[in-house]
Length: 304
Image 1: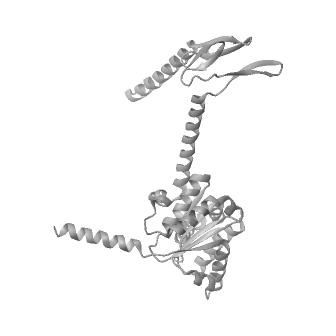
Image 2: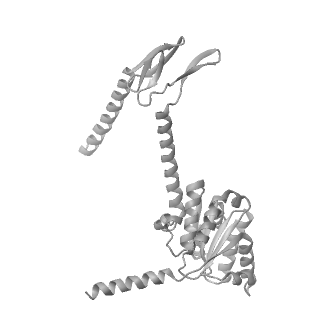
Image 3: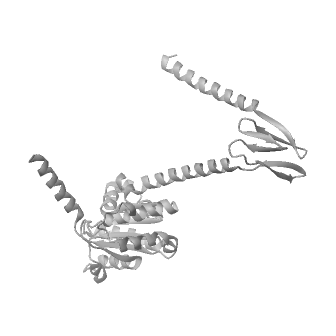
């Protein structure tokens, strides 16, 4: 047998032997006493007996409950003390945080979007707008029930994607709902690259199944008959399933209201308006401002 396999086998045997030893030690520490004439067992390492009852050594709470009769036989069940309750709470919170992390990994295109939160919004962001978005999250169950989404519109670089991701993060953390952010260009690329091997109904169905979906940067996709048809199919599928949708766009809301010259484009705009509440994001292009600051900093460093 190769040396590596022997070493692995020895490690496995060692772990098994240590586990058996711990189990035997625990068994040695388990004793049984009579409580109200009924057998009750406890671990002397973690609990102690006083005045005919068993108590936790850490929090000193009694753990033996009142006798309960089941199928003509009486039992004494163990009650959870403060320590057990805290351990359970911590375990449940750990499981909850793991689930949140899993949902976020599936939700966001870029990992840094997991850190886009209301608390991290810059000082230039409209506080009233943030308040409205927080309220949307607080009332999300009602929003979901009535299929109420959002249309977050404004100029380039005003923070629309950041705000929509903040909503997603808050909804995931509060409700543990499956969410997703995607743009139509990505959808079109996926559909075209998939070709005949891609089940389009299944692909659109997966997007439709998300409790909350963000269509980011609506209006930048290729304006072709095929593209418009696919965009309408996805939006209409969400509409028919009554799933709330958030759309971010550089288009002015009046342009959406007026519709386009193309019939399919007009249908898309009409459906979007029907599905979402408009929220305007004002401000300058922050990406441009950051870029100019970076250039200025670089110049200062090079001129030293």
